Length: 187
Image (tube, rainbow, N blue to C red; front, side, top):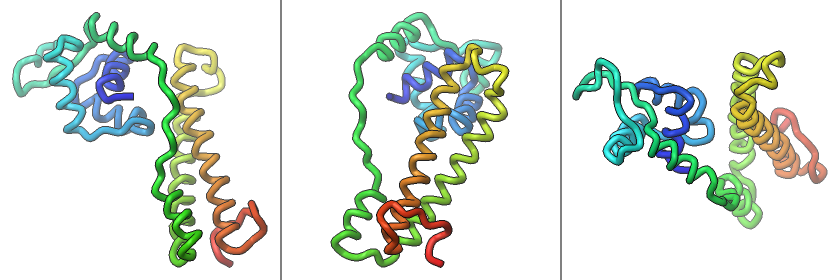
């Protein structure tokens, strides 16, 4: 995915000012495609210059609040991009490489890092579950946002995977049986 396509998607969901868009990235889109506020504003300018979006509303002048909307060429570009084949990306996580290094160097200090990562993933999972509870109640499960809910469920499953894997890694690091989960680190 690329930032311009993330922005086009977000603006098709809801035309927004640059500030509103950056807040939406902070609250939802940023969970799977992050960007700084500066990157978003820079990309909005490029999209506007290339005729894919336009600023509208009473504040469309320089230095005033602009609300951006996707133009037909922007919609066509997003449709073109969405239809492209994309191979899965390999996992590139420094923690996995550090664990591989620990296999030859020893585990000094890695246990605490595994525990820290587990807590970070636990907090992210709790946040995703709260978003699901708030934004996707069971009575709306078949509604128009079902694909957005599917993306969120992917995040929930990914965080659940990481928690299970980190429990297994901690079990191995602490000398337990292979795959043995350890709660809370060393006892």
